[in-house]
Amino acid sequence: MSFKSAGVGLVLVSTVLVGCAGAPQPGRMDLACRNGIEKAYDELSFARSEGFSGSVGWSKAASLLGSAKVVEQLEQYDVCLKNVEKARFYIRQSQGG
Image (cartoon, rainbow, N blue to C red; front, top):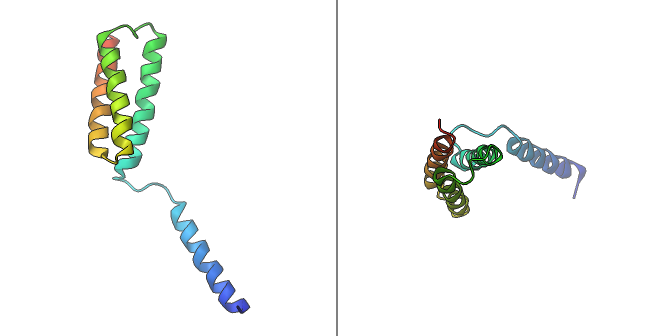
């Protein structure tokens, strides 16, 4: 293997790695799902700390978020996003908002 071919290979590998390190592209449902789950769990935790964990809305939200994590693993991101949206609605409802 010559230094020239090794250099070309290094440039190609570097280019691929730089391309992967960019910001996420808009429309990436997998990232939207993951970020939505994280944000909703934060909101659910806050609602729990405020004493709303016994409400029906809080319980529905917790179940929907568990379901969202399952469908995320199955790569059904549209269903994940719908569950996250419903869960966030029930979290707000449990807090009286």
